[in-house]
Structure formats: structure tokens, C-alpha cells
Image (tube, rainbow, N blue to C red; front, side, top):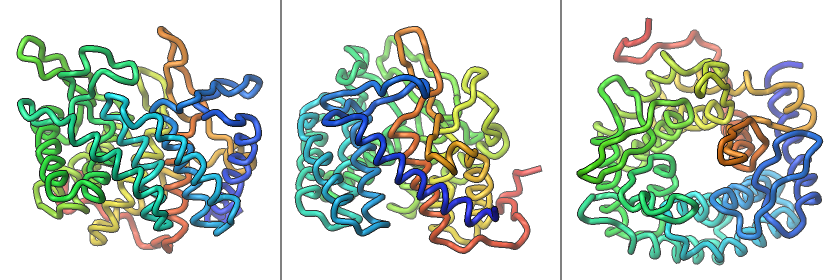
Amino acid sequence: MEQDARRQHAIAAIFRRMDEMAAQCGEKFPLFRAAADTQWTLSKRGSWMGGFWAGLWWLKASVTDNVADRAHAVRWCMRLEASLDEPSVNRSFVFWYGAGLGNQLHTDAAAGQLAQRATHTLLNRFDETLAVWPLDEGMGAGERGRCMLDLDSLAPLLALMHAHGGSIGRDLAQQHLDSCLTHLADATGAWRSRKVLDVTQTQATPIWPRGQAWAMLGLAEAACRYGTQRYVDAALRACEYWHRQLCVPEAGVWGKPDPSAVAIACVAMFRLWQHMPEQQWLHQQSCLHIDVLLTAEVVQAGVFVGHHYRTRPETSELVESPCALFFLLEALLCICATPILNTPLNTPSRGTFA
């Protein structure tokens, strides 16, 4: 099967998989499934994963133009309202992918109103002293989250603030972005995913593939939203670091693979390439990486066991999740909408590749 056809088969299989998941999960949000012979772990409110479940239906409806798919998206979107007051910056995951995306792709007014309400509640949680939105104490972070800078939700946070936060939201988003650059990035393009900003504690997490992929996604968003050279350069450095150090899917999260990081990185590189088409290597790397993820299980059944997830307090394992599936589908939809370039792979203009 040629590669274009393989990608199209994977998209169709993911759509069928979503229908199967919906039938299995009923009125609750799917969080993860650890093995093929187990049931989905479900949540009434969806935790931080719920927005991706609604987002999957927004993506599917944008392709199929099917009334039932659109109705699914709207229904799951409206059920996210229960998380509006959750004290966590990860609400931006929930309400950008679950609501803002619906307004962007379908001009859905109800989704737009929900995204705007979420944005306003987030605006009230900005810490002017730290110049960041702290992770905050909700969604399991606890009291330490009040002074924790967390990178993961940077991309949806910027998207929400630019779409629904007005000039104040955009200004605060840039302050948060600059703080991330100051505290979490190094000169090589490597990013740490979180750091405590308390004066008595300076711990930062180690560099790991999904954290780097979240950084790439956030910086691609920043480069497209602001166009400032500082953000463009930071985005390219982060992608170059990924290419040099982390681009092999089997390379590890503490010795374990994390295919979801590859899917997120593919989306990030594709978006940055759209902003900078002269950086053709970004497009080609995105295509090469996504094709590595298209196993027989994905292409035939739409099953993507690709997310390292803490299933128990002391246990992390590869699972199916709406988050991983969302980014795999988004990457496929991006790539399939653009002709594959047949010219040789270009290296970045700064010449940092061997």
C-alpha cells in the first residue's frame, strides 16, 4: 500500500475506532485503556483529557460534514462546562480543544461562548508576581501547583487567549510565554516541562520527549501568533533539538517509548513549516515521523496504544487515550491536506545538523 493510501486508511480506521469508543463508554468520557482485553477507565467530568475527546469529534465532523458527528461534538463540548471553575491551567487543554476548536472549525456559537467563559476564568488566575499562569492546585497538582510553571498546556493557552482573551489576554499570554523561555529553555533548544518558581525551591524536571514535544507545539503556536523573530528562533531550536536527540520513537521516556510525543511533534513541525515554508525539512520530518507511527494496528483498526500514562500512583504504562489519538489524527489530517514534497531533505538554515 503506497504511503498516501496508508495514511487515508488510518484516518478512516480512527473514525471507526471513535464510533467503537463512543459505544463502549456511554455517557462518560474515556480517559485511557491499558490493554486490549480491558475496559476503558471512564470519568464523568473528563479531567484534563475530556477536551481531546470532544476535539476528536470536531475534527471528524470537519472531514465528514456529518450531522451526527457534529452533534456528538456539540454534546461532549457542552458537558465540559463542569470543569470551568477547576483551578488548573490545564483547563486550557479542555476548553481549547473541546470548545475553541469547535468555534474555529465550525463557527459553533455555543462552543465559542464556552471557550470565552473559560478564557475569562483563566484570566483571573494569572499570577502577576510570578508573571505566569501557575499550574495551580486543581486536577491533582496540589498546593505546590500554586507556584509551579508547567509547559504542557502552552499551545492551547496561547490559542485561547488570542481567540477569546482580547488585548489583555494576549499581553498576559506573551508574559507567560516569555517566562517559559526564561525558566524552562536552554541554549541548545532543550526544554524542561516544569519548574517550581518559589524562591526556596528551584527544582526543574528532566528533559523528556513529550515535554520537548509540548514545547515545540507551544513555540510553533507562538511563532504563528506573534511572528517575532525571538519566538521563531526558539521554535526552530526546539525542533532541531528534537531531530538531533529525540526523533527516534523508540528513544525513550526513561527507557520507554512514547509515541504520543512523536505525534505532537509532527503537528508542531507541520505548523511551523506552514509559517516558514522555506524550512522544508520541517514538513519532511513531520511526514517521516508520522509514517513510523502507522502500524498495522493503527491502519487497520485505528487503535493507537501510544500514550505513557500514570495508571496507578507508582505505575506508568503505554495506553490508548483520547489525547494521543487526537494528535495522531490531527497530524494525519494536516499531512494529507498537503502534497508530499519529493525534493531532498533540507537541513535547517542555521546549519546545526550533521
